[in-house]
Length: 79
Image (cartoon, rainbow, N blue to C red; front, top):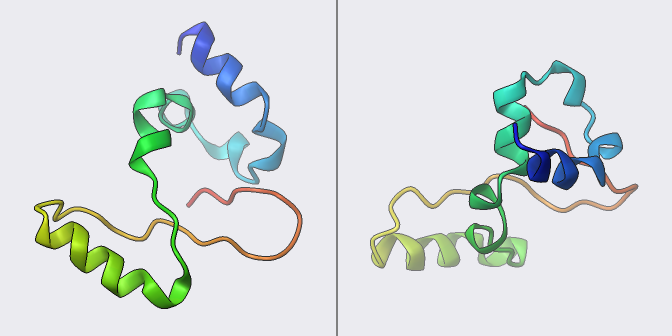
């Protein structure tokens, strides 16, 4: 893992409840710029099916729901 990935993860590592169970490649994947940013889309829960249908129609057949935003303290559960 390079120093930029380590720096990316340092800011939120305490909010990930399974960070200690992840191996180095798993941690690197969470912090790599290629796996965040523009690859993530958020939408209202009641529009998920329509949004996924648009992606699939446009050829992005692997588009999928990967999580949800819920009320409560900030954090990330990695499964």
